[in-house]
Length: 277
Image (cartoon, rainbow, N blue to C red; front, side, top):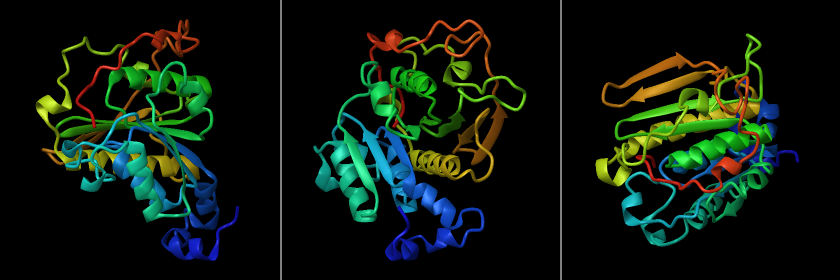
């Protein structure tokens, strides 16, 4: 599929970028990205991916828009309170860029459907709000050999990285995955949820926008991947910190003696809410 004259006009600020140009824009048009969650992270993420001309955006979310979402979930509006988030997000994307196709999955990602859904896309971006889903997405992307751009937010902070655990780092070891950084989820009840502690809405906007940048970089090959590095954002101090993260040879997914070889470990795990999006 080549770019139409209307698309050339729409994306001309991309086309004049030396690092992107016509070939990069064509890669965006040919790509298929799955976004987990159409909430605080998924909102700016989806908007910028659609504006950039990503050809197909998959959105998986089983939730409905509520009034208290609108302080941070900018892809939705007051008229869509009560609507499925996938439907609301799809309508916003259609108004923003009619050249982008959407595939709406109005369901929760589970051990039963994760590999089937993820395998239809080139890259996955996780904007989920619970630990169970994060571990599931991490494991499924590794098994399906799909790059995963991960972000999470708290009241005034956020975290961002890219997982390519199926690839080797320059030192010959595997790149790390979510389980290398967070070996286990915190015990239930030890992490307050968003409704209890709150969140500054724009913090989700910062992380979701940065997440979109990293997805676009992964698609086009521009710059350095965040694989093997974790970006930490502190909104109160207006500070970014970038730290190296390493493969854990003891982790159960990609370690020296892996015990996770399929998604059966997730079959009966509840998706407890965290302070997320």
